[in-house]
Length: 543
Image 1 (cartoon, one colour):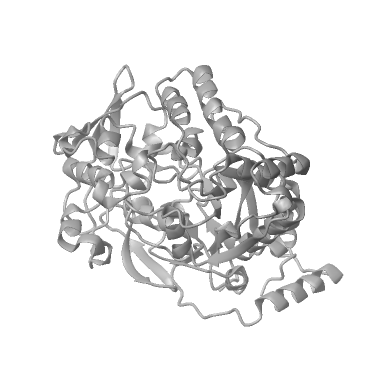
Image 2: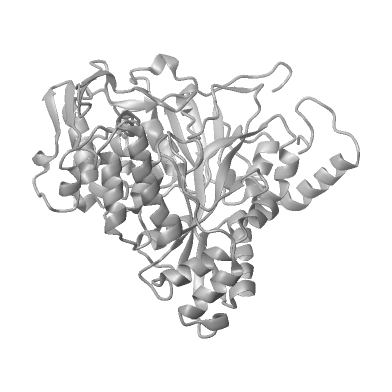
């Protein structure tokens, strides 16, 4: 086992080394398990909920689904911007509202059938079909009549402005110019899925074998709480540049287990920050194989505004005003995260977020008293939900103590298994809920539009017509200064005026891999790492 604090290839020395070994042995005792060796093994975070691109919401699910199902575009491995995928090229009208995609004539399913324009239409309309209940359906609302169809105002799918001009040509008409539309086409909601398999097997289509795949890999096996195994798709249009034959992606609920598997060389990559022990980040940062990078991700608390007492904005503001964010990033996360009062990460697009509420316990107590709970008296018992993770639990403990000390209120902490946690959020079965959001594309809209009234990813119960109006105005203009102004007005409503969420900090990304063994993995602000480009090479003298 390579000691935690030693640079790769160098012999560790001194008391610091022995302290590291002591920490590891104490944390990792009994955590090891034997893994059958694939060509590449990756710790992928939590157990995936589904691999159906139309309904998945979690990052672990998305990483795997995008290896199996590709869109008209795909994410570039270096900068994570859109590049040609199943479409080899496209034309854009002068008003930037009509996109004409030309599909590859050598694009075929892993089972041999050609991938055609009708497959694209079927896949996109399935996401928009209200019966699918896709949380990310809003990502297609930029298409003319898509929102109306998804919300039931239109019932004929043919009214949605996406059409097959011929066997290999798809034309899309947008509501407004949308500068990030090509990036959306690389997102999982726009992936191309096998119509005949879905129609045959219904909701269980993802379990069909063989499962037709439009992406770089095909599914071999999915064993719950063990791994998802994928194999190179020989029929993929770019198969010549897919590096690894078989890849296993494993869940790990325990950071200790994940780290132990990596240090004992049973896995090659750990790329989910939630499964890296927060207690050891200071030591890990000294290693060459521990990589830190800027990341389009925000950590915040969702409030269920449909439940008392959080239906009262004064209560929400009071809870926000007593959160010492710096204490959380310095005592718990410790990775260089930036404590903030806003939602949209800095450096995204031509945009600067407005400041939200600061730290003011006195003002918080005044607001809570005004809401009818002086000194916390009479405040109902409420709970804070988080998915099972040591770091999320530690943040919850800090928040619980801040709310108790400054407001005199008791908040119960409730740890939930990943799938149960996601379901509770979607069904608004919570009071306060740990939340995060990773940008789907490099634009403020990816963080803000989910709080529009009809967006399934809202998950707060909050609806504000003025917010919806600001967002629609922002999306109707491509003039950067005016657009930024509309977006800023919208974000102000979220972080200062109404507070359906309580911002905490901006993420930094972490992952673990040996740069002498792993190539083709490039850290970028979207934390997007296409498996097709990753290659493992053996170092001389290493078995």
